[in-house]
Length: 620
Image 1 (cartoon, rainbow, N blue to C red):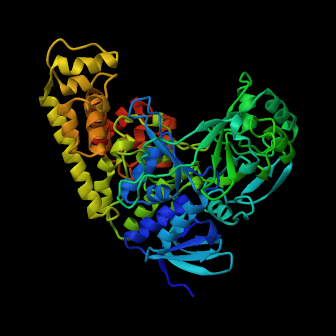
Image 2: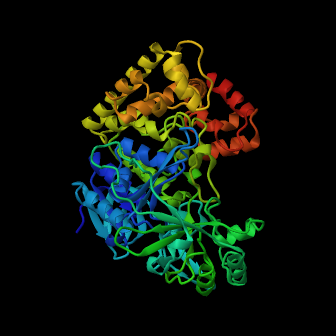
Image 3: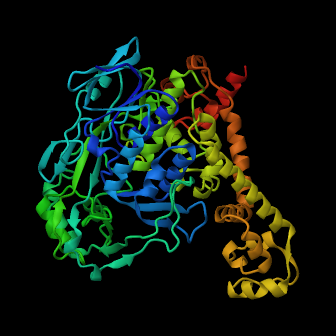
């Protein structure tokens, strides 16, 4: 019935979709196996993309030639650039999305990709030959041959859903769990664990009183994620709303703690630290008398509302009683209650930086199976796994992003070298080179890499080259052009910064914290110049001039670290002969087998002294 495929992708969530699209676009034949064709790229939790550091990841995926940015733009109902009041390293794009459109557009893209086939089924078992994956066996008994597998199982591996004292198997509400794969992988020597995530109740927007809430509109001039011309910024936006819990809400929630699966010990897995349940919030932050609730629409043509900030697994009757004590929710009707879900994951220290497993050749893991949380984190892993699965089969160079090149590189490096015992979420603070890894320059950092791979096309590459050219011309003009006090001082005084006593170069004026490119555009010698350039080039030039000193320092740090990255460690290196390193270091190095000295330095428990000793031995 089935021909042999190059790659089978198991699971059609955000990781699976990016993996299938990337591998197919590079030339591999791909079979995407999903339990439900109507749930492709389902937004299981919040119908939103991006956010702090996550928005940078979406733009990086787009720059490399992935589709998450394009699908997000096509389904956006509201767009906001977060952290505008902070430095540009913190600016993070975020979109509220139409849940149904998001899934629909992803399916359309995949169906339009010639090398992608589909099969609706569950995978029960991997077929192996001498430690190499060579096929899968499905729940319906189909044996499908392949040369590589990308496993993106999300929360479905032995998933258990919890609502109060009720618990039942499932990967999402109303969908069955997947069994068999964990047991097989453990029998083959893999280490597995349990994690937990949760989701809030969904309510009927017609039953809410928005007059009692704070309105939250999108940006006046919204941007978008994708650097391509295939999408445009959203022209009409839906507003969101903000309200708050109160002491009465907290008291009702506490009455359900005895029936809470988390406090009763029925949930063993750790939940996400940075997206805790509402019961966890009122327990951990008992001194606070209120918590913020974001009231977010699920799409253009639905009344369903996502109650962001009220994730819970308390009994449904407690959820309802507490919700109706929140301002604006007095008459709220619930579509479905919030719940927690516990599922299997595999500590990612068992992976190479390509996301291929160390134990089984040509088997790749991506997404929540690696201990991460979030659509964006899953999507970028899927993209990298799909690329590397193709490259491995085509005998091409492996694709690995450095920490200094992308947040994607930071995420995968963290997972593989440090591991995680709680759901991993990306933040700007995780990147030591975050001034270089901004949302505005992801195209400059990564498009050439996507172009060399064959995922980004000629139009994209030419657009990046034009942006770099324009940016250089603007910077050159600012560095050589002076402004006279009479022209600039009224603007400086208005911005409450000191006037200049003599002519100053424009770049020196722009370096002041109070001054930005928009304020200087009022000068004829600046306004007339920028009329000839794109807004993206102007922003890029502004950031490069304003943060020139900081960027130079980061580049020096990168150069220093790259020297360690260039020192490769042979896979067969005998760490037992290096007597001067600590026992902990020796055990971890033998287990994780770092490819370079830089990678070894980032493994938890490896000291600078251990690295110095290794450096001496490698030098010999």
